[in-house]
Length: 408
Ligand SMILES: [Zn+2]
Image 1 (cartoon, rainbow, N blue to C red):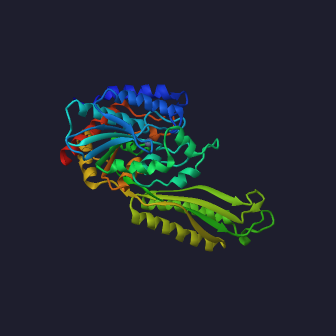
Image 2: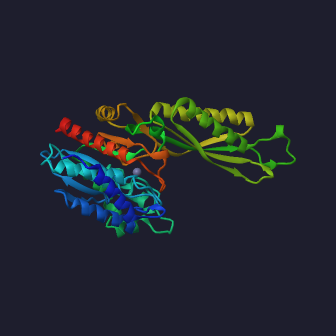
Image 3: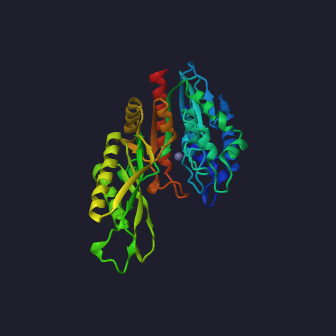
C-alpha cells in the first residue's frame, strides 16, 4: 500500500482549520491550541498498530515495532509560530504518519520505525528553539530553561509543568535516541532557491553554521553643524561601511552575511555618532569558509576603523558550527530525488532544524526540502503546490524504504 498524498493534504487542511484563524496557524508550543493539535494527532495515530507515548521533554512518539530493535525515526514538529503557515513542521509530521500507515499495512518492517513530533521547535513563546530535540540530543540545560519567560512574564518551567513536563527531568528524553540508526525529516524549504531553479525537491546536505558578533566602533561625538567633514571620528559611518563589506563578503565567497541592526549614540540628527554597534551575522555550511568569512569581516572592520579614525572592538554573541548530514543518506536521497524530478538538487539549510540536533547526537540524518511558493514561511501566505507535496511524500516514502532495506 502506498502513502496517500490526498489524505495527507486533507489532514493538513483539517489541522489548519482546527488550530488556526484568519491570521494563520496558532499552535505555539505549551499552549492549549498546541495541546489540541496533539490530541487530534493522537486521534489519527490511534487508528494505527503503533504505541503512542510522550518522553520527558514532551516529544510525542509513535512506535511501529519492527523485526529488529534498531530504529529509524521520521519526524518534525507540529508547533508553529504565531500567525504561521499551514505546512511548516506539520508537513513533516503528517507525511511521517502517512508513511507509517503505509508501512504498517505490510506487516512488521525490518527495523522499528518511529514517528516523532518534537516539542517546541519554534521557540516562539520562550525564545529558545529546538527545545525538545535538544533534550533528546543530550543538550538540555535546566538552568537556562528555568530563566526563560514569555512576553506575559510566565516562566518556562511553569508553562512546561502545565503540560506535564518537569524541567529537571527533560534530559531523560535522551534515551529515545539510543537505538536510533537513522533520522529522516521532510520540511518546506522556507526560502526561494528551489522556486528560482524550477525544481520541487532538494536533498539537504547540512545546516549553516553561524558567527554572530557585535562590532562596536568608538569615535568622538561632536556637533553636526560645527564639525568639519575632514575632522570627524564618525562611528556610525564606520559601522555602515562594515555592513556593506559584510554583504560583499557573502556575495563573493558564498553563504549569507547580514548586519541587521546598528545602534548609534547619542543617536540624534544633530550629532556625529561617538559610538556605533553593528550586529553582524554570518553563516556558511563549511566550517573553514565560515571562519574565513568572520576573519575577513574583522579585518575589514580594522581597515575601516583606521580609515575613519575610530576604534573597533568585537564581542561574540552566538557561534555554532555547521552541521553536515550523513553522506551516505544524502547520496541515497539524491538518487531518489533525481529519479523523481529528473534533476539532482542539493541545498544547505539556512534555518536550524530538529534534524541538526539529532545529527549532532551522532544519529545519521538527512532532510528533504520541498519548494515554498515565493520563498515565504512563518506567515499565513506560506504555500506549496499540491503536486509538489505529492512528489515530496513519494520521495520520503522511497527514502524510508531505501533506508530500511539498506540497514534492515
Ligand atoms: Zn519548521
